[in-house]
Image 1 (spheres, rainbow, N blue to C red):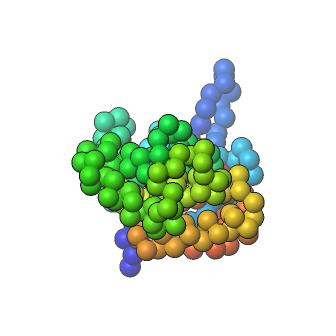
Image 2 (image 1 turned 60 degrees about the horizontal axis):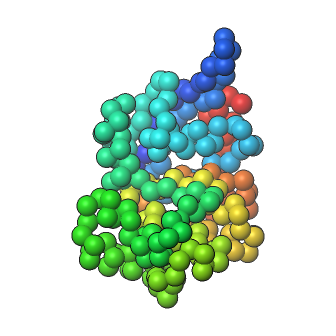
Length: 223
C-alpha cells in the first residue's frame, strides 16, 4: 500500500462577521498518497483555496487534525514553517517569479533558503530546468519567457527541493487549452517520476479527468 503523505481529519473552518458565523469547511477529510494526483473541483467561493491553504499550513483550521508524512502538525509557527520549507511545494495561477532574477536563480532560490550551497543549488536547479524542458532558458529573465515557459519555471521551482507534497491552485488558469494540456501532462509526469503527492485545484474539468482522483468540493465544504 502506498505511503500516506497528507491526511486531513474532521477539518472545520469558519469566519465571523459581527455576530454571523460563516462556515466554510465542515468535517473535511482527505488522504493523499505518494505519487497520487488528486484534483479538487467546485464553484468559485466554495472553499477550495481555503482547503489548499490549510493543507499547506498557511492557515489554521478552527478544529481538526493535519498530518504530513504521518506527523501530526500543531499550531507552532516555527514547526509549521520548517515543515513547509522542507516538505511542501506551491504552484499558483500567477507564477510569482522574481523579475530581477534569471530563470535559474528563481528555481535555485528555495534551495538557497534551505541552506544549500550556491554550487549545489544551481546544479540541482539546472537539472530541474532540463526536466521541464527549459535548460536553454536558464539565463533568461521572466520577462523574456512566454506564459507557458513562466509556468514551467514555477513548476521547476516547486519540485526542485524534492518535496513530498505539492499544492497547486489553478496552475494552468491563465493558459489556453492546448498549452494547459501540455503543461498538465508534464506536471503529471513529474509527480509520478518523483513520487510526489499532489492536490490541485482546477476549474478545468477536462484536465481534472487526467488526475488519479477527482473530489467535488461539496463533499467537504458547506457552501
